[in-house]
Amino acid sequence: MSSLTRNPGAFGARAAILTLSCLLALSACKGGNGEAEAKEGKDKKVEAIPVEVVEAGHRAISASYTGTAALEARAESQVIAKISGVALDVMVEEGDRVNAGQQLVRLDADRARLQAAQTAAQMAKLQNNYARARQLAEQNLISANDNDQLKYDLENARAANRLAQLELSYTNVTAPISGVVASRSIKPGNFVQINTPILRIVDISRLEATLNVPERELATLKPGLPVRMQVDALPGRTFSGTVDRVAPVVDAGSGTFRVICAFDGDDILQPGMFGRISIDYDQRANALVVPRNAVVDAEGDPALFVLRESKAARVPVKLGYIDGEWVEVVEGVKPGDRVVTAGKSALREGTDVQVVGAPGSDPEPVAAAEAKSDDKTETQQ
Image (cartoon, rainbow, N blue to C red):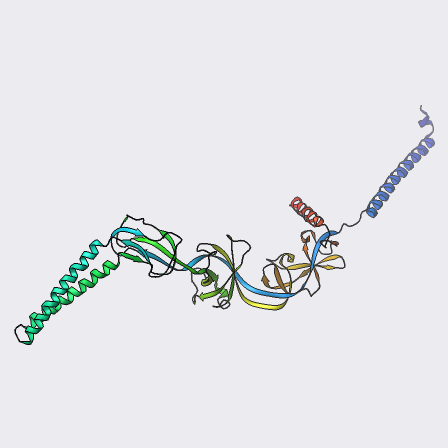
């Protein structure tokens, strides 16, 4: 028989000692981990988010409607050949400035000149015949019917001569309006058919842009309001104009009405240029404003992140007019409040923040924080 069987008391004592040792070892392990976690939590500090801020303040702001449209010449004319003939001389080129009534093209006039001479001779003959007939009628040597017939023939001859003279004048093609030659479709020696367009003239002294504006703006936009325009072809430049005309009716299909803006033409603006147009319809001289890029959730419930004792507070706001890079704040903040303009994508209510962006500071922490926030968002998605 083994010794354990012989001494059951000794076996129980040994088991109790072994169990106690395990419990002490386990307690020591737990205690060590707790101290490590506490030390780690003590060493770990909350990291402040770097942000850039701007103080809310007062400035003048304008309310405006913005849209896009292409520029068009207010006056444009197609020069039409009113008589057939060979173009003997084309006196203008594309881009030339012309005045109303200026000769542009000379057509072959031989046929028209002969026709005018023929009708003139016929008219002269009938004038003599009618003069003699009147003398005979006074002596009762000719009937009244014959006298009336001669008078009728004379009037027809005069009309035919005037028509021939008119067609002769058509051989000298003149400008119907003042402007610039936009296109030319004939060359000297070409045969020109009657009613054929041969030139196009546009008056660029005044240009127009037509906006199709939603009907809710009908009571706001009126003739005479100032207009600002920027064109893609001329970056960095702003051109001034006015609202020239406003259509009095709304299109039932689109729910819009036409607003025509006018601009003084020069050698820079040209028909066909595409412009971004702003119509200023109201101004406030002392509005409380913040940068437009400070607003979050602008399409839903607008809010601003405002600094409160080095922490970010999300403040709902009511917005007013928007003017370029600035937006009016009607409710929610007061003058002097510091609002976050950069770094706001990483912020939540109560987030610790560190203001950067002062003169001489490094803006890179803000960009890094925003990039980190974006990466975190993508990971969660």
